[in-house]
Length: 172
Image 1: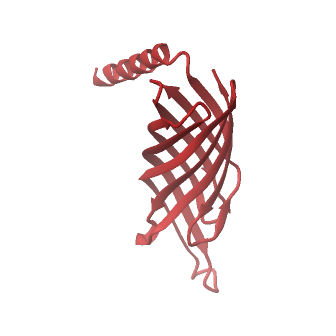
Image 2 (image 1 turned 45 degrees about the horizontal axis):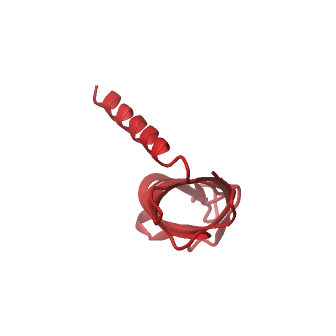
């Protein structure tokens, strides 16, 4: 029963926001150039999706979802973030976002012989944050440039997954 109420509340909130923000929205998709800190691993095959709602002449809300897929020591991250946006002028908006990231990583190494091989893997939900700028050079075109970071702790060591996002979107 509670899950049905939660789903209905989320759906109602989404639809109410859609009706209120019909005139000022931007939907975008883009590329993420990520990095897995202290391992030096670049993260290929990464995508980012953003949705921006202009709620008033000055303030709006940004929602963001990323899919980062790694190789070797690190498998994937899926951060889901949201936060406020402030419109500086007709062309620029700044935003800050915070949320959660689902992380999965693992490692396999060999110390000389087959018997000495070791492996570990883990999953984690971690706090993620980011900041960025939305640029609207034309009436129906938007560009996002943003930075996101998520800390992870495999084997009680501190690492970070971070990335620079570049996106193009349709402003309607």
